[in-house]
Length: 177
Ligand SMILES: [Zn+2]
Image (cartoon, rainbow, N blue to C red):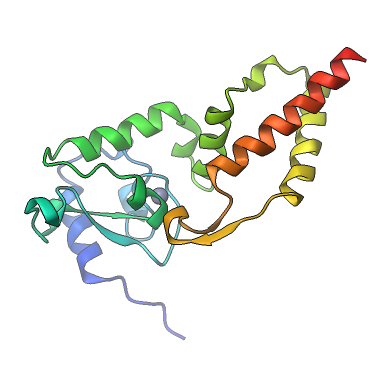
């Protein structure tokens, strides 16, 4: 089977933006911008055509108003008339989650960790070990979700937050013993 052809709108979009924005502000390098979400770097065949200024606000369906995102990021994208807000949003995400700049690190657990308010740097090495084992356990007590608004199959940030809080509570309990 031949490799699926990259959609023309994505090619046009990369061609337009690669000379106009700094890739270090994005979740992808332009070399891979045809196949990954520009915000979270997720590799997916289902990149969505997202409008920087929404069509409902008379945004155009042209490369200068288009950006490929995964459906999870699409759902979180700001819908405003200002055309710099989307770029600010992406840059800000990466400042919050610097690890997301490296590929294959999912943004959702990192968002969940932020929601949980837990600082992993508080953990001693053996505690970190216990924490990870507990996370594995609580992942089995949670579920991924097939849902457009959560980027297809995946554990939601809200679920990750629960997993981290439950696991952290176990660490605190062990500390008291
Ligand atoms: Zn994404």
